[in-house]
Amino acid sequence: MNSQLTIVMVRHAEPVDFEGKHGVVHRSGPESEWNDRPLSVRGLRDATEMAETLCAEKPIAIYSSPYRRARQTIEPLATLAGLSIVTIDDLRERLLSPNLSDDYREHARRAWEDFDYALEGGESSREAQRRVMQVLDELRNRHPKGIVVLASHGNLIALALNAITRHVGHDFQAAMPVPAVYRLRFADGAWQAEGPGLD
Image (cartoon, rainbow, N blue to C red; front, side, top):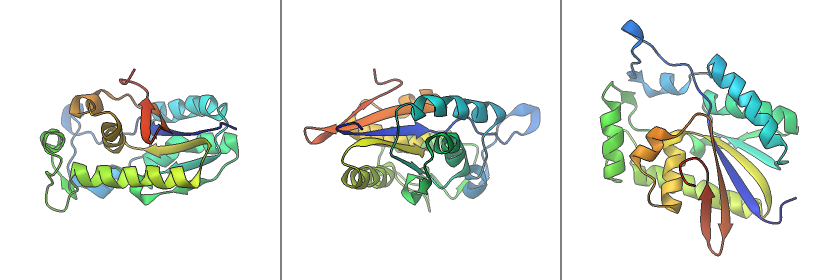
């Protein structure tokens, strides 16, 4: 077992999209419907391939967002590793608004520029960042050493990485692959991170 704790943050694999006329993706309607999307065929294949790599690291615990695409991403790993998936509600994606419209990208960019910006009923970047960092600190206390895997979402993971290394912002999040794997280690009183776009 590793002598220190490594938290492996996994951004979910590719989900299905809601497509409108001419194949244009529309993100409108209740946020709950958007968050309930399953993985695509490609996403399921990528999750299976990733599971083999992560299983070789011998994780001791697996946690997931409650949203289906995150849980499906980590299910093949849980099966291979013989571990149960523990749901942590605070690993859910950042809530930009309860009802999104096609201009959500503009609001998402503004939320990176102003960490206190929030739409009605939504969550600011600062609020979302605070809750994900609390999860990391709680798991650091729960698991002093070993490999712990978390399945979550692009915006929330990017906000966690921003708290660790401040050059992470909107453009970084927009360029994050699906799935994506980031490794976090706590040393000398601070988190350190590595992964796509950070190296």
